[in-house]
Image (cartoon, rainbow, N blue to C red):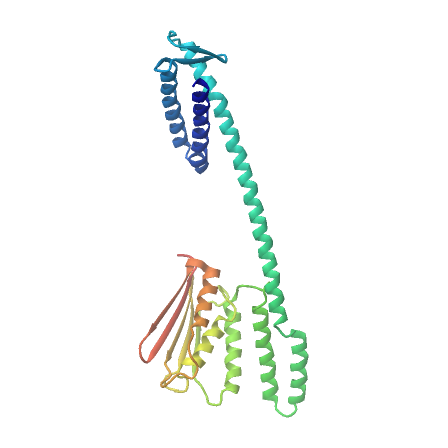
Length: 316
């Protein structure tokens, strides 16, 4: 009976101290840890007293069992209390730190594995991206050759070929895995102007898109090809052939951020190309990745009109 009580109670001390350290101290609750430890030792002291001088009357002094009807002694009581608690408290603290170091090592290994997996995935994506692209130098040679052939007969077409190559190079650089995630608003607006200039030669009928910029376009950045995606949506879904009601793209830059607004009339009749909202979802995802909560996107529409507003406010 004495051995059974001793083993069970020492295990109780060990696991109580360990669990307090694991679930309270480990979370930085120092005051709660001290209070729980103090309360546990007070309760344990009462239990030890009941064990020594209560019903069981069992006392352990220097590894000897003294049974039944012995007189109370503070020295013997404190000695027994310290023997029962000090060793197993120290073991519980040591076990807690051992488990903490083991968990820390496991976390480091997991983080290293995640980093290696991410690097492997990035290399795979990079290879896929590069293999899907035509090499810029080859494209430069092709367009340069075509331009030299066309220039003597049609200078305007030769200039258009140069613009197409510059825009294609812009797209290819924007989609490089290791490429820049931000570009200046001024560069994005310039690429949009090139895109619209090329579309003027490609579209069979004249279209009307008014691009208006205000403020310092060199002040803030944007995701590459975002404005071209918005313009591409206009060619898919907007009525661009009414001179009196042109589609509008406003880029307004302030001291704290910028706002991009797209307004257009909806194309009447059945849509030639179905809308899957993939472009807008990509825009939202990319801008939230770059700017987080500083970015907002809002759509307003009725049966005839559509308006999209993108806003970046860096200093709220």
